[in-house]
Image 1 (cartoon, rainbow, N blue to C red):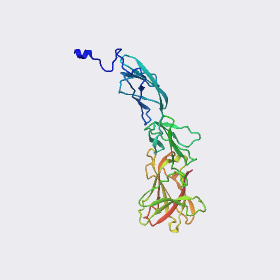
Image 2: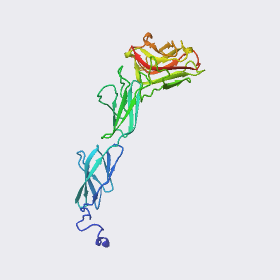
Image 3: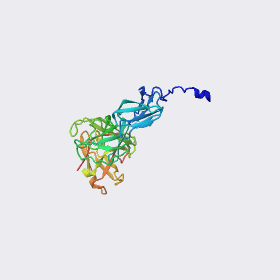
Length: 347
């Protein structure tokens, strides 16, 4: 006990202050997150300090006390800040130092845009804080805000003016942003618009593809058209199906007109079906909105008209989200080839 009293404790002088507490040797460590949360972890260091007071330079909460070796975290908006760190010795003496902090949010990545049903829009992106949606159907459009995980309600496009391009802007929470666009698939279907995915899925082993116009004369001088092939032996119920980003809206008319080309006289009298499915709200059911029109010629483009006003039980404002094509559904395939173009909704 006597020996312990007679010896000094290393590092403590007669005035009991820690050496270096007033030396100004105060440092900080900023660990800035890169996930656009704005979180910055601050780990102050300093010779001989027993605690630190950290002022974030943002907000009005005052200083927070941090023990040596510990950290404090604060969420910053994007911007420039000054962080003040005060080192406090065991005697209460202090040393202050300020440090500049710049918080920059990264641009969102991997933006994915989804549309469903009656143009219900959603999106996701890494490092996004929110989104702006531009439907592309009005001039000088102001973006519609959309939160993370939100699905915007249905949007109805006008009867004319398409094709439309949907734009979604992923916001970082700061200046950085990422934009994505989606060219929407709906009537008129002309196979000419760059960026539109003219999707015609098939069932029953028919084939469908976008090809060069085989007969650039008469009613149709466009460059590209759709080619429908029904190979020999393909079942009579075969065809194509096309989910539409923009539904066919019977508020704008109940007739669909199609330019059609039949290269083979043997196909005269055979009928093309246009079937409208997956009505918004479920009414009418699939299999109701079905119309057929026969080819009347070969070797020249003609216009086929499908009039749905003759079908009872289809309300005027019905919207259909899928287009189905079938050809000569009374017989199995015989190797028939037909071409279609300029599918449009009219009165």
